[in-house]
Image (cartoon, helix red, strand yellow):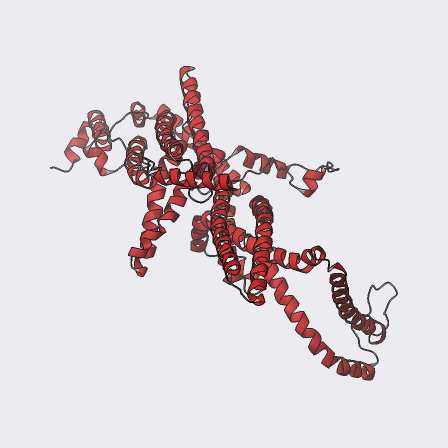
Amino acid sequence: MATRMVSTESWQLKNETCRSSVDLDLFLHYSLLPSVAIIMVLSCLEKRARGHQVDERFPLLNRRCGTVIPLDFVGAFDNRWSLGFAFGATANKVMIMFSEGDFLLYVPQWAQAFVLLIGAFEVGLSSYPFFACLSTCFQITGATLGFLYTGFWLVIMVMHIVQCPHGQIIGHYEKIMFYWPSLLCLVFLLSRFVHIFVKTLWIRFRLHLLNEETSFLEVHQAQYVQQLLRKPPLQQSQKSWIQRKVYDWDPYFRFPTRMISMAVLATICLYIFVVIEYYVYSLVLRTLKTLEENFEMLIASNSTSKVVVSGVQHGKELIGITEGVWVVTTFTSCLICVSYVFHILACYRKHMKRLWAGEKQFLPLGFSKLSSSQSVAAIARYSGWQIAYILWGQLVIHTVQCLFGVMFMYSFVLPIKKGQGIEMVKTLGTGILTLAVVIGLMLLQVVTAASFFLQPKISQDDKEKPLALDNRKVFHNFNYFLFFYNVLLGLGACLFRLLCSVIVGAWLIARIDRTIMPKGYEAADMGFRTWIGMLFMDHYHTNPTLVCFCHILVVRNRERQQQQQQQQQRTTNYYHFSNVADFRVLNKARTRWLLLYTLLNNPSLSALRKPQ
């Protein structure tokens, strides 16, 4: 024990003298410079949909300097896992943003919201190159810049960990426990950028032209519509136990990038949150241990009363029980929250397929139709809210489970360990008997009402008797004498209702896909409103039937325009200028050339022109 204390003290002394030369907070600020530079480079390569007067003054622009899109939050199905791991790489930056809470003490309370907004904008701008380099159409440039920027952050984090791998609370390898998910995501992004670079060069070297016209109709959406047009099979294939009980994979459905990114980031943030929770738990436990040792020294040095000694013993016993229960419930609460992440994905697929089929009965009456602005705002805040709900759900579920675990230990385990098992069994038997009598009397009322106070069945095939009273005088006396007993019974039923509400509310606090409010008050649940708004937004923008219909219209319109252009080229003398859009020609210069060509073929028009 003494050797362990000496080694701990020497480690703490060594850790206190350790000062890393890499400050992640400072590098987060410095990373804004290369981030802005990468955004400007990608913006210069991006083309705008429409020209501007600036293009006529500066011909070299040629509709360049367009808007860079980090990722498509609506209807995007490409690079889902890459963008998900890009979100995972930002987890440590989010924790850095949370760690700057001490700075808020020096800011007025009314301005704290703006400070948090600026901090979130800084984190988003620092992480912008991860997403922009994955989503850009210029894959060689994006892969090169993304690889350099990701490697920059990977080197900085590795140096920060290697120089001081230990911490003040957990001890050995504390920073490794914190940052290994983000390091794994950064390594994945590096390999992904290398893959994109090599694949693009291979296509260029083999002289395969890249198709710049991207279709908004995905393959799985077309397959879904084709599957709807087929006749259903006469016999359904038998499903395995995993397909029936756990998850049934649907080849005609793909989760959007937003949902995959949410699942990845929620899992990583949940891990970091549990580590932080363990840090706080270690601090509280260490403080309680110190108080316990002080009280024991006080008892050993002075003659204290038996009440104080008994209180110290009970406190020591409570600390030991809580410590064990807290560790066990940490794993159970984590499993529940992780299962919630996957269950939310399954609910998203189920609800989307119901909306695609035109079924809205599963929605509350007040949510059958939401305003467009609410749906747009909902899809913007869903991912962040879902992660926050998961983290709060972990804390609430863990706390409730710990309380029930301590109650179970004091009610069952400790009496048996202290040799009071027989008394505990007697008390438990008395409680079970009382509860059984109460439930029996409630069932007796139902059986009595069915036997004596209802008229006989009209038909023998009826399952129940009709709702028609019989023996009314006896029925009124029955209600009168049971009125006073039901008042007392209602007290216990009310407490049971409150207990069930607390348990169900705590159990489902992390579930944003269903409301915990009673019927008629669903609008007060802002999380559920966000979920419904997000569903409607995805339903209107990614419905396979609607997207397929729009795709057919666009293709036929494009074919009709091509036919008209070909016919026009055969019948007009202006076919030389039909492909003028393929060259970098200004609108003003093209108009002048067309005017010159017209006047050369029609000299009489020169006299009709408006003079300068």
